[in-house]
Length: 398
Ligand SMILES: *Cc1c(COP(=O)(O)O)cnc(C)c1O
Image 1: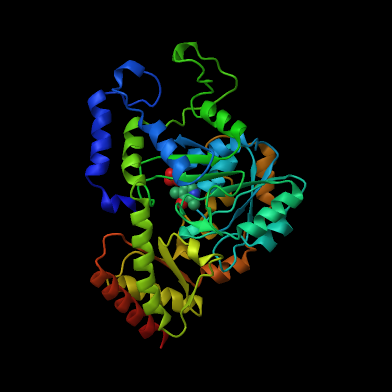
Image 2 (image 1 turned 90 degrees about the horizontal axis):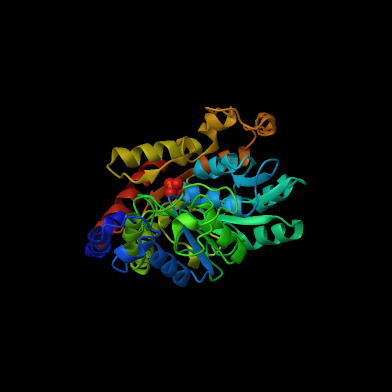
């Protein structure tokens, strides 16, 4: 998954362009920047690569989500349906908007269970936010149908699934909006960065303003711009965008490498009785950054995970115990612990949620191991790792 594995002269050249001009800011300074507009160029590369109308770069995936909430009009009193298995940024962005996160179960796709989503819809539901976890997709056809039937917005958190597709459509471009993260460990990295994608002209125009303190960006004189509405500084810097420009051109290579290495590990684990695999709604669209698999019981899964790490097989994750990714350890969310007073309606709504009642998610996550796929393995290394993983798991299961 991590694009940082293959940094090279491409990223260096783009960054040097910026350093030589000395203009690290994405806006203004037109006559001093030697014609370099790395953020604009990266946005163009993203719209072309992902066949989407508009792309607004941001300082992170989290601020891309916050931007999405703002431009899609999600705020105080609104409910946003999101999964129990994601990254903390999902609920952070919802809470920052003043809205209420409504957590619902995942299914064996490791993404939102559409039936659980349907049960969670209330008159206050403004948005459904599927998260395409570990490189593969939520069941977008069913979620789209639900959102359409109930007139609810659909925002894809595709931060972990860049390059993935569902029935031929690029993840992140199927809903009303989508986001990618370019943080340091993502498939494409800028160091830090993110992007909001949309085909909606109005959302895009407002995202452009919102991420730069509400400046309207009309005319070339930054001092003379007006502020149609409140905004924040969620800008990406030219330096970060430059890294991303070098990286995005490697996406096809990254996807091909991940798919090749993922298939090698999967072939070996398929031989182990008791190992089953995450259901992927459209297998051809998996970006293959992880191989996620299930073992028969939580106990065996814990033992196998420990044995893998003991055998030097790092990069195998047991998310069930992970406090970044699974609801079980999100105490700060469950207790609505905040440095400053939160909107009382939100605190009350969180207080009423039954955080212990996610048996379906627990039953799946307790038996899941996700294995990170690296880009720099040689064919021999991938094969050796695959065999060692299979032997380790086999010894635990037998
Ligand atoms: C990484 C990530 C984010 C947030 O991205 P940052 O760039 O780290 O802020 C959001 N959602 C998911 C699912 C992620 O994995």
